[in-house]
Length: 114
Image (cartoon, rainbow, N blue to C red):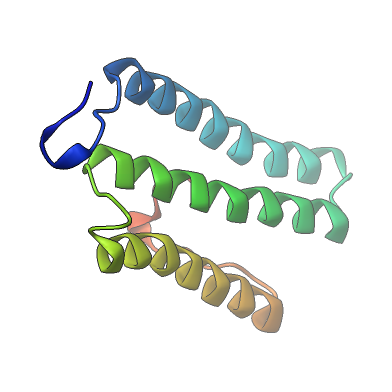
């Protein structure tokens, strides 16, 4: 459905689908590392793959928020840029910290974690 200014409304079911997909993703993301450590099958390659999936998911999460807030990249360029690159920057800094310190320390407001 077209809105004022030529933008297009996002169907409501897409937000329900995104909610369910994020819940499943976060649940499985928290379970796989714990299971790998419990069975002794964790590896640096598994950690790299897990962080790669998390990095890709940060872009998808940003796109979901951009759609939910009704931003249009051609009109709201700065807001879209911040919403895409800010989470990527935080993810990069925390991964960099983990690389140099050997442990990933997450704050209490991080959400689900292992």
